[in-house]
Length: 80
Image (cartoon, rainbow, N blue to C red; front, side, top):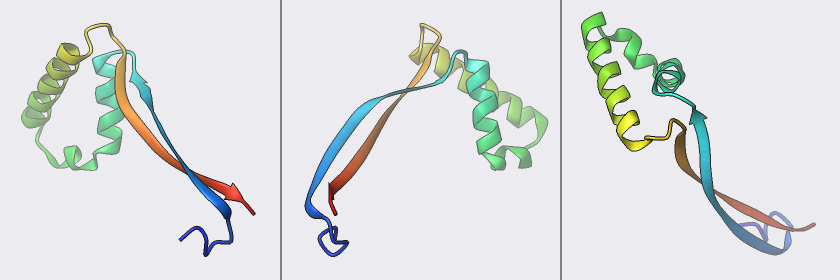
């Protein structure tokens, strides 16, 4: 595919790392509720239950405070 894009000697580089999403479970919750519009369609009680569950899961997995999510990227490059 990239040869057809006129790249000479196309190469692939796979990068792995971690992205800091938030410093606290509450910051993470606020960021995710902005992204997940479906939560706006739930009633208050359901939303609060989901929020408690998310806080509990985040605090169990990320005990040091930083919410770090695994990330990766495939970089394709070459000469033109």
